Length: 78
Image (cartoon, rainbow, N blue to C red; front, side, top):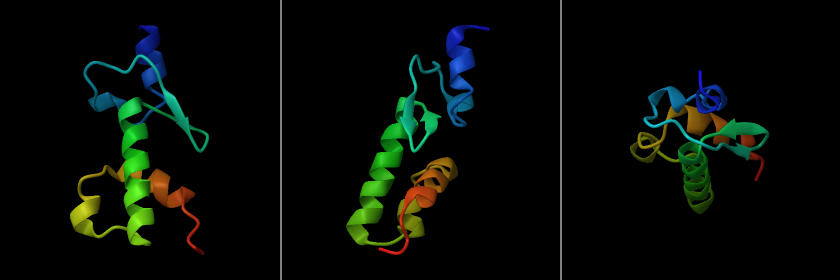
């Protein structure tokens, strides 16, 4: 198994990637691939913009993995 295959196991979405990522990024202590990292930041931006959890019509464009990561990192008392 290549080093990239080993590293890719850190991100739960990487089983769907072809080719595998050659680097991972960190978000809130979680290693994710660059695609997931970008999606996390976009989902969080949308959440901040509307001030609450986005409706299903927006959420359907983001994986459950991305939604879970963002929802765990959002301060819901704001």
